[in-house]
Length: 255
Image (cartoon, rainbow, N blue to C red; front, side):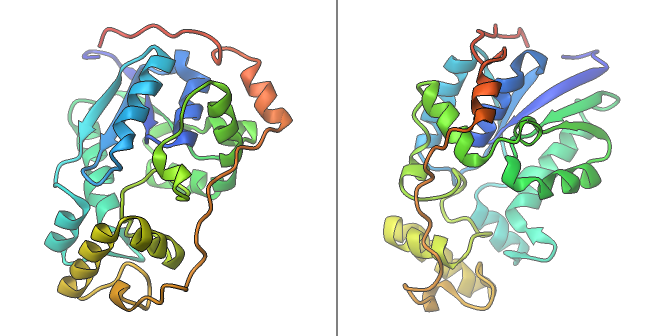
């Protein structure tokens, strides 16, 4: 898109909310970008390919520099705290800032985000931390929740990422260092090797993912174990799906 003075970027996170949010505004999006992290669930690639077919659009994959979440945490000697998680800053925020200062320098940016109506608190935070861009939140603007997004994706005939059916609330990294006790006990059950690796990392760094307790000391009964998200239909779903571009085919841009 060299030479353009404005660019609308759809940030695709490989989650259901993100996928549905972008589908709602596709004709107004110049480029779809997925920030790939090495710790993603293996089914994430399948879901992204399904979304590309659904959109009729290519999703550009930017591999986050710095390696895996564990590599970043060990290098920083830090996991998470009031200043945020090591992975967020170094694997997502910094690369985006580098792109803005590099290939997008001098470009008027408009970002599309997949936060749902239950995450409206994140809207203000985004506007404050990224004041140099215009921001659009399709799901929040339409009053659509995470459960609504799951119903809409289901109606479109797409199979959601495997992590949701395993009980996880998001299709994020396996072993998310920002998660709580219930999540970690589910990881212990579903992915014991990931649990063991994060436990070793905690001890080596001298910090924990869960505030106040190391994973190797976490009681298996503590925390609220997540349950699979059940799709929910509301009038807002019907309204959003009755308008284009939900049923439209969107051609691939020549990037």
